[in-house]
Image (cartoon, rainbow, N blue to C red; front, side):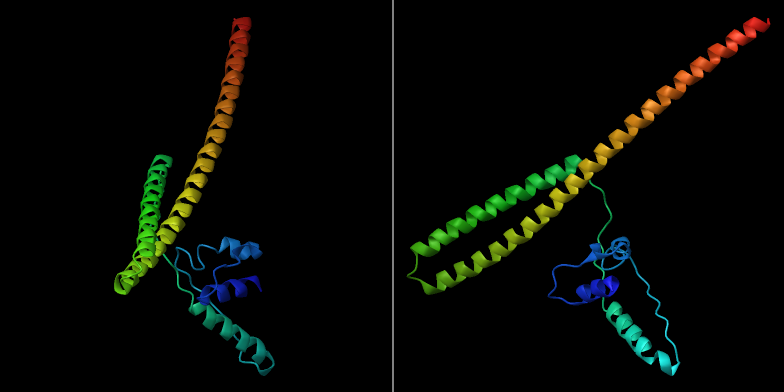
Length: 189
């Protein structure tokens, strides 16, 4: 099942893709499964002999589900300006690290005489590449979050525009009704 595939993917450390989008259930439970929530799972079993295979399968599923570890993070929503600032900061850090790596690689190519220095330089280069990779991932996450916030702001703007038009329409209807009432009252008087 799709839920079983997601549980299996979350418990295997070498899997990078978790197939949340394979079903509506796993898409809805995405935050609960390996996300930012506490999750309780109740499995029902039967003591009947004819249900032994299904009970064993259920217990195995429950055992796999028990191994899922959530990765909580603080639920904070950053404004577009904050995300833009973080994005600029991450891009500057990546540029700095990239130039430092280039300088170290140049130095390594020029200074092949000292093996110890070369080994240390290679270790630093590997470490810096890992940092650049991490910063790139963070940058991608920040870009995705910024795009999501921009879409959300756009949707809110459209919703506000629709509500404003609705209020204007209701105000016009109210003014028309008031005028009709005033005309009716003056006609009676």
